[in-house]
Amino acid sequence: MATADYTRRIIHIDMDAFYASIEQRDYPELKGKPIAVGGGGSRGVVATASYEARKYGVHSAMSGFRARQLCPQLIFVPTRFDVYKEVSQQVRAIFETYTDLIEPLSLDEAYLDITINKKNIALATEVAESIMQEVLERTQLTCSAGVSYCKFIAKIASDMKKPNGMTVIRPHQALPFLEQLSVKKFHGVGKVTAEKMFHLGLKTGGDLKKLTKLELAQRFGKVGGFYYNIVRGIDNRPVNNKRIRKSLAVERTFREDLSTFEEIVETLEPIIRKFFERLSIANNFGRTITLKLKTSDFQIMTRSLSKEYYVTSLAEIRAIAHELLRDNIDSFEKIRLIGLTASNLQKQGEVPGIGYQLKFDFDAFKEL
Ligand code: DCP
Ligand code: MG
Image (tube, rainbow, N blue to C red; front, side, top):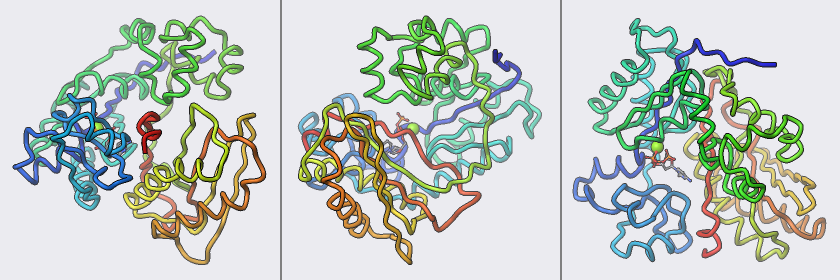
């Protein structure tokens, strides 16, 4: 039986309304206004919204159409990935003055293991405060921090006092904290899994804790074992600064099964766009594109197409995805998940893990 390692000091840092804050910083006329980054076009999806816009219910992954309905005065601003990347590198440089054990999860968030830190600061909270201060000075942007002994809790904690807030969960607070924690907040539990859990009467960590390891595995597959340990405060995953990226994937599960080509093509569009966006941010395209489909009876089908060159245009990625779908449309009746993966990437090895857990807004997509 595994036990928790309470000796580590892990910080999770996450920038506040990242793209939107950068736009407001660089275009002062946008300060204090409800803005959405991305989502301006007829089929566009909002990448993120300023805190002023969030008051109206506008959020990441929502269709621009829906966002405009909720907040008619919303200002749509185009994305500027190069600038977001540059800021990300500035923040990263600050982290590096504290520790080399840094694991980026996306442009705007990272885990830091500061158990031993280069500045010999004894208190993890002091390290977090100091990082927040330096990020603000260097970039004029705020971030939030979660401090704990493991990655899982640090990540949840960083979200609790946003914006510009720090939350510390000490080892003796971990178990009661996890007991009351809504499963919706569990990193790795998407909207569909959370709904499934709700139907099973599993609303909090405490509810999950009542199930045996076997029961969790039967209900949730492999990740069940992870939940079993997590609700007991056991997460000994190291902060991994050498994550090697071999592929980059975006996928989405649906509430309702899809069957016709037209239906699937329509639902595929925001996935294609997100996929292209992530490849662009990573500046790392692949020669091979794979379409993954999970049928309503849980069979997984993958179909790939490889080129002699790196596929770097949105139009070509879309054409390949459509071709793979068209060629296989007769192989299944109904599907419940679609994903796209790029492999044989341009850059392999020391590419930071750029993948954030994508939380799609299913209702928004229905309206597209
Ligand atoms: N992003 C995106 N699509 C999503 C989620 C996020 O393009 N579905 C982009 C835009 C965000 C950035 O990634 O600015 C960081 O994502 P976060 O989830 O950390 O969201 P924010 O930083 O915008 O807001 P918060 O203050 O809640 O962290
Ligand atoms: Mg953020």
